[in-house]
Image 1 (tube, helix red, strand yellow):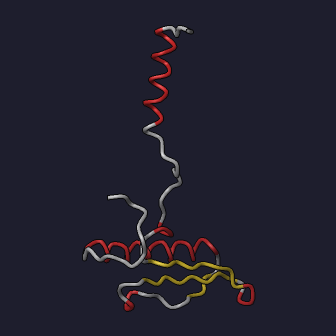
Image 2 (tube, one colour; image 1 turned 90 degrees about the vertical axis):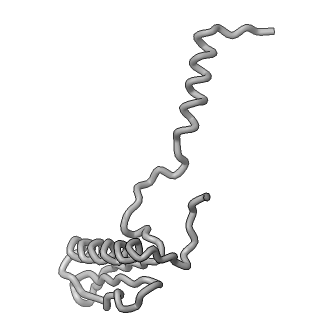
Image 3 (cartoon, one colour; image 1 turned 90 degrees about the horizontal axis):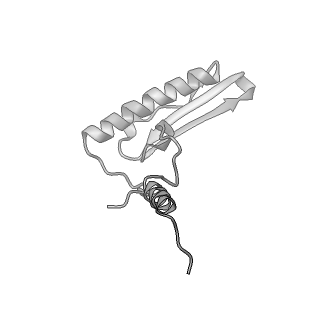
Length: 105
């Protein structure tokens, strides 16, 4: 039977305890991940610009029409601001979306 030193045992225990605090998916959460909100940004080669549109599944009046922007940064900024506004609306009214959540309760 092999014996393990106390120092090595402590190191193994600390390593196992530390594993409990790590997440499998540690990617950042962004405006593209809001539940019930769909953000579309894509290039418009025929118009020399970028299209952006934000839609949601709980209030059609908050949707934006397809808009044309001069560059990708402008399209991203518009989409981010509108998605944040719609998400604040959703949170302030405690609206549940049809989009499934990955949360475990």
